Image 1 (tube, rainbow, N blue to C red):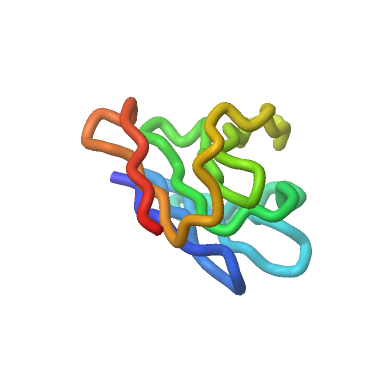
Image 2: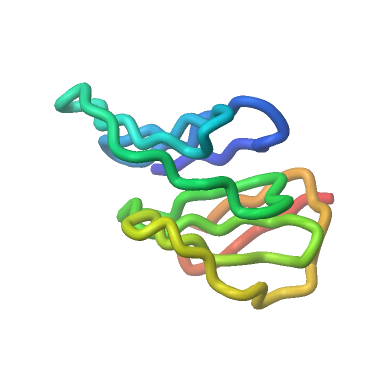
Length: 103
């Protein structure tokens, strides 16, 4: 089950066999089984908290402009689809189809 992290500094975003670690380069994917790294995904602008959904291909971030989807395969970010903003944390529900936020 993925866990969430606040990306104000360094954080880890966990999936079944991957970890995303944030640093000055962006989010770097680490494969925990093969011990390899992928290219960094640039930080989406002003994203404060992130959750990776089950399956590990999509993340949702919450920032000043709302909630956005981030495609972890391509690094592309969608347009905000919710005006909920400036929250401290975001997580997915048990099936990955529900987003929970905390202010």
